[in-house]
Length: 318
Image (cartoon, rainbow, N blue to C red; front, side, top):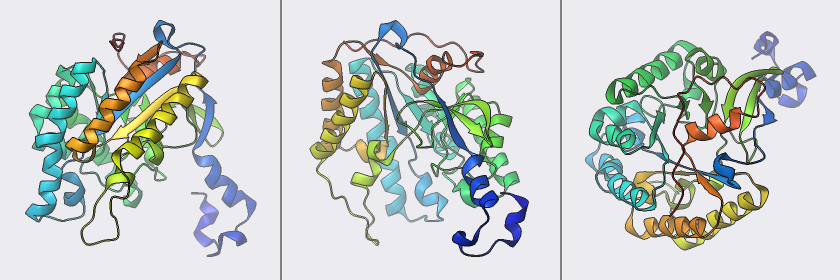
């Protein structure tokens, strides 16, 4: 935040141009990173992801009741195994973003992701709200999470998704300092792009997300609040199929964010299976982890040097 913001008027309409422009320019979308063709000559890239939050959502908020923790445990006990079985059946590689506390609670699950050919990426320490943290605390938790996943799996993650799907004033600098190749938390485009900070390209690839392509807004339930599931699973499946069809027409990316404790229920997993059938009915589809997508997107940059390790080509859908 610019230094003059310390004495800002309370109303944003009273801010000088240098202030509101400074906020807008601090983290911005740069060049779109969409090659003419994806690896193998594919027309569209499909990047599925799962946020394995499990018990960290209630733990983050200090909620320790067995009932709330059991909702998260469902993701590890029932949801994740079903998801892994489905992905194996379709030979689809994906990315699992996992808070470090989830990985410590379920270390064999974390190892199974990479053992089965999927990517494991950083998703905070305890699904903390990074927007509320000071710089030192945010950096320490991000670094601790990175080290924890590396120790558990023997592979250093190259990607990150902030638990809050947002950046604090320090987040971008922390990502660059810790050497991440890509982020997947922002929403400035449908396609991957390079993040620009104050007008300067950073070399960090953004693989954008959106609440439209996330299961939580459609299916989340809070017994004591106003949040209630309001969507039939197959209605949501129709939205996601339309999103894929548009990406296919554009020659772009279809990215999807799911949660084992949400999509992993029987009636909802049917929708994911039907979505995979729909995608598989199209030719020239490249299923990729987010790290593989990042590497492909980097070919659009003048400097294609990437801190990530070379990844094998993703298998095609049968």
